Length: 255
Image (tube, rainbow, N blue to C red; front, side):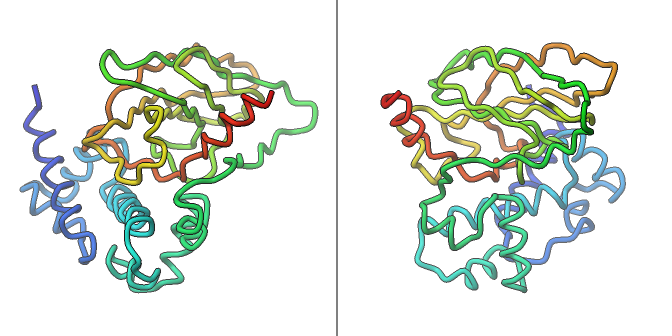
């Protein structure tokens, strides 16, 4: 059963979605929730894993992704529609979080041919640590290719530290993981729906998470097993551009 706090946070997120082009402050959100600013921020983070400001930023960029694919609006107009007063700031933020520039995202219909990982910064001669686990399919619904990425926090944006693609739920290994504290984040879209750009919290996108996971010189992480589930309104949007699974499938056939 949905708790009172879940309902309150969901109401705030719905208000964010309805007003992405407007200036929305933490005070405005707290007033909608009818809590003090500090209490609201703590409750919001507890429900979503991120601050209200970061969640709002992710919603804005996710809407920008949709507008880039589904409309002919200029990048400047899209920037304004999602609450940015500077096109340069919008474009820089978009590229950092999505992985490619807005113009490139539009040109390639929201896909990338590969997902680069961040520099590992491992000291020379350092022991190589792996994170292993099993991704389980959701009890209901169809899943397809599975993207597993390692990120510094619980929002899937920017370059993953490590990533791997499975053709279906199952065992995985993230190799050569640098020391640090990480989150394992998983996304799956049913076969045949990879090209849909209307994927959101009410559709067939599946997600999962495990973390935080601490990797150190003398620590072997426990298995990070993850069960996929339908994405919810309380989950931050997946901002990374989709890997072009059509290329992956063609390479597999060629091999």
